[in-house]
Image (cartoon, rainbow, N blue to C red; front, side, top):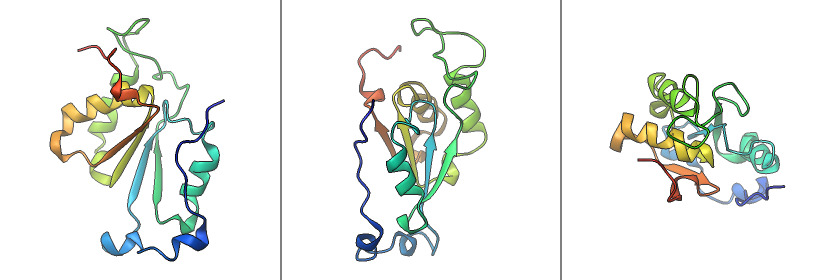
Amino acid sequence: QATAMATVAPHHQQQQQPQPQQQHGGRKPVLTVIAPGAGLKANKQVFDQLQHPGSGWDVKVEGQSKAAYDVYPPPWQNGRPGANLQTFGEEVARKGVPGKSDCLLFGSRGGQVVLPVLWRAHGDALPPAVVINGGCAMSLLPT
């Protein structure tokens, strides 16, 4: 079972910190979670805290784990053509999801496949990204 690596301060502690809405024109900053590989179930407690109305974040979830596209593309080992994480990433880019986000959160295979697709599509315009489970840090990424 995966252990959540992030901690979220309890609601009463967050009130003592500057409110993020002040930095985003009165709105909560948008955290977009790219679901495949993010561990939405394994890290449920952390994601529930982030989605709590007092968290300071407007959390959006894009995609889902175990969907038909939640497979590696070629040239990954056992990669499949057709609907896969690369085509899912291309769809996320085409829909303009990064432009509607203040921060992107990826996990594992999302960081390995989807994040590089978004880097290629958006370059320096991509908002800050957090990768849990070190997906994009792997030396096994195909070039």
